[in-house]
Image 1: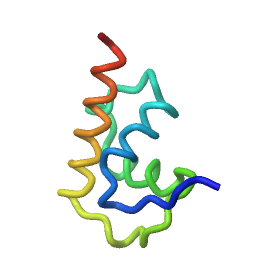
Image 2: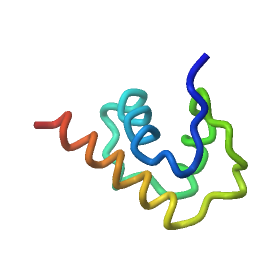
Image 3: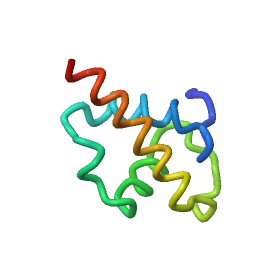
Image 4: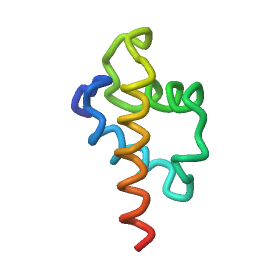
Length: 72
């Protein structure tokens, strides 16, 4: 069973999103779609209503860092 992840685990979420969607530029993902993608990750165990723009932005930036690393 995957480790539980929460909204504050931006780095782990970014890694998982990069592994699941390696060809997706995170900057093209709307926050509404990002919210859905995060809540559908294996191990996601937080309250979906506890997300907010700063948390989603942190996740998007963590994912972007992983995406850029993979591109180089």
